[in-house]
Length: 167
Image (cartoon, rainbow, N blue to C red; front, side, top):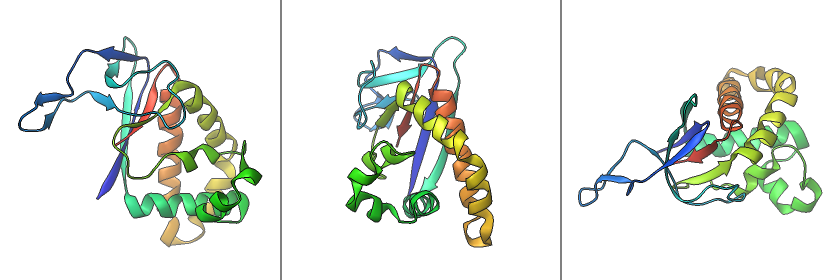
């Protein structure tokens, strides 16, 4: 099983039920968002497409790889894994990448809006050099640099009036 992470810029709401054939459960090809763990930021549940001049980007990551990636990201930054960050959350409140603690790895339509995407893109840019040095230390985790770059790209796109959605 894997998690599909989609980014959209210049998001435009479209009237759609979310399904091409509701009885068969066939979903439309739009970006359907259902909930906002970090705030709505002017969005509402429903289907979206990139508006005029907008673009989209998506990538997939396995659920266990996602958890492993965040553990390694937090180890790089704070010397503890995700559980360590959660146990002492107050210590890390307001720190880079801490918002990800509120986004479940197994979600259907969990969405991060443009404002938070701008903040997270800034985190990815600020720590890119450190991450580039950290992630390829062993062949076993070299793939994590690719995931880092994918997240950075997704949040850059979403920063332009869009969102990042987890499916």
